[in-house]
Image 1 (spheres, one colour):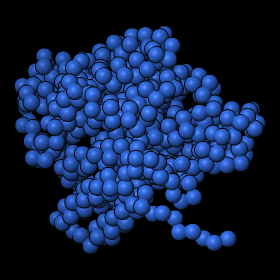
Image 2 (image 1 turned 60 degrees about the vertical axis):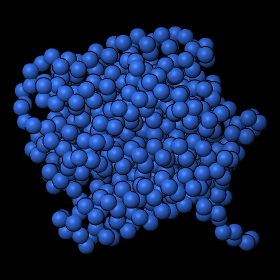
Image 3 (image 1 turned 90 degrees about the horizontal axis):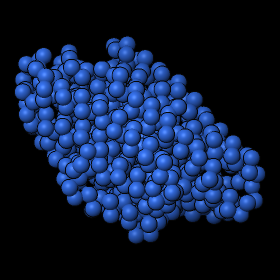
Length: 478
């Protein structure tokens, strides 16, 4: 049997990121702390180069390579571009924070680049093993990143919890995949879907496999009842690491959800739809209610993430192209909001001080009216208040659910969204109506100041003109 050389062009961005991550790793060994900016610039150049290559290799029709295990389609191209954007912004926001805490090391950038590579593989996976390989590459990099601050007991504890629980979830996912392979005899998403449509597989085994796969996906998304790691990891990890974990990986988790459930297990829709309804309801309820009791803003945003995951799942539950495009729109918008929210915590922090308590935002308007305005936009967007883009993101998924005939679910989500608005408005109240407890001037690098301002204004601009991004998501989900 002759060996055919695969077509490498659809995977050129992945090959480039892998090569550059290895180069950055080697180059950083020969750099002193004074020259560490070279590592930072090389990492940013890697993301820029990957973005250019992703645009170049984009194809109007899905391209398959590596024996059908890898696909380059519209959804993959768009999600990868937003993963690059999110990671580049994370690097900009984190630079000064890491320098002040003696964490501005090559390890941070190399691990982040390998995590990006894992996300890219997940986004383009067309095979169960490819998804698992991408997921493990992402997870192992993130476990190490959480533990990067070695002298911090909280970071070490968070990393241990994340590693143990993540290992269990990965085992669940792998077990579900092995059962799926046993029932269908294939690892390819298309072939699995065909087997299920033909009804030539053991229904009981498929249902068990589905349960384990949904558990694995729910853990990676941070959905209830598999959310226990989210607040502890968000709180325990350095804020720069929390910023990374809370944004780009959510985009990759959405891609995994689409590849596994929609493309591979679409024939079991009636079963996974019921599971996702329960998970979404619990996530929206628990996330919004428990967030009210938090006095640490990182934990508050962690529970906020859990509630947003519940909203994200609503579009998938609708089980139609408009629902899928609404969920894609939602996860992109959430990543942009998460970047701004955690970026503001970094901006208020300084050497020896973490601005991770709600009280640290008191009187921000008196200290710096512009940053307070940016935070106001971000909090309004997370709460779903017009004219911010968060409102249209929630409206899109709720409309999809209503069109699918589940009006009760939309009403439930709206009621809990109103409840959840309390803890976002509390931050605004602290900023505008309380006196500052800290009069230290707010200073940050020019690039962070510009990107943070652009981040906030983009949330507002997309809220006023959401059509372009919605149309982009719809075009790849049609």
